[in-house]
Length: 129
Length: 129
DNA sequence: ACTTCACATTGACGTTCATCGATATAAAGG
DNA sequence: CCTTTATATCGATGAACGTCAATGTGAAGT
Image 1 (cartoon, each protein chain N blue to C red):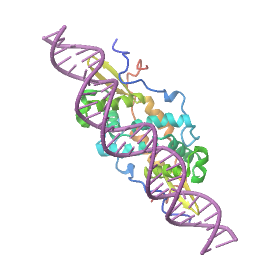
Image 2 (cartoon, each protein chain N blue to C red):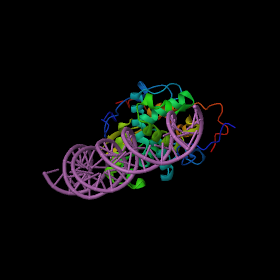
Image 3 (cartoon, rainbow over the protein chains, first blue to last red):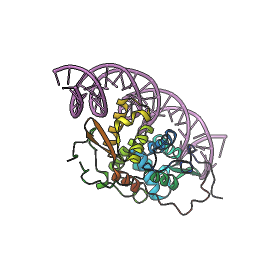
Image 4 (cartoon, rainbow over the protein chains, first blue to last red):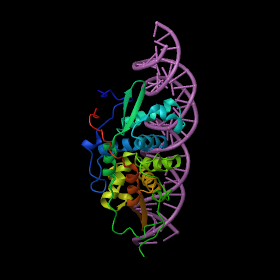
């Protein structure tokens, strides 16, 4: 039994996919939906967190110890950022021995892209600059 | 000639789509790419802005004057938020008479969803909780 | 048990941000 | 012109955030 160890950092605040909202171009967001979505976008609204997420997503699984060097941030700062990504439900951590391994949560990102969909309007010519 | 009036608010800072980066699960982001992307996500990381964007996207075109009531924010606050969305390249404004009409920029959102792509890993069972 | 190592938590500091009142700008209508 | 209307800008304020040094915690190794 490899796992089911409690995630380090904090637990995700909500399962966005299970209740949240039509695509933005279909129906206007309610306030509570917008707040929940904004929390997830806020987790991606930092260059360091974006790079952490991208490192985790591109490698499938990354140890916290391998994040300090490429990002040039202190250990507490890295820990803070991984925690925020975990709370947003974008990554999950698993503690194995002394190390914490992080993996992306594909479903949460899918939900974001689904909600973000915007159908191009028919007259998008001459809109440039 | 309906238009080509200069956008109100400020101009978008960059054409993300023309230069930015592979999907996050393909290749790790460089620092400059992460910063540019984080700026766009930051524009969506606020409930009021998300609702504004969703109203604009769902109706195709919205006047600033029709945003204050549903969002229950002051006129300067609405102006501030539409400006931030415009700088992020998510909406464009067109001034017609005394009114400013806002429309979504589909390409910018497409770019976000493209970059955000995360291929589900093969072993995502038992990951829940 | 003691030490070491990986990571989380705390506390502090400077910066950015959301918000609004007041004011400026600019277009219509008289 | 003068007033009205829609929106942008300015200035201020309180809250949230990114960062790191210091410290806490808990698992290995000896």
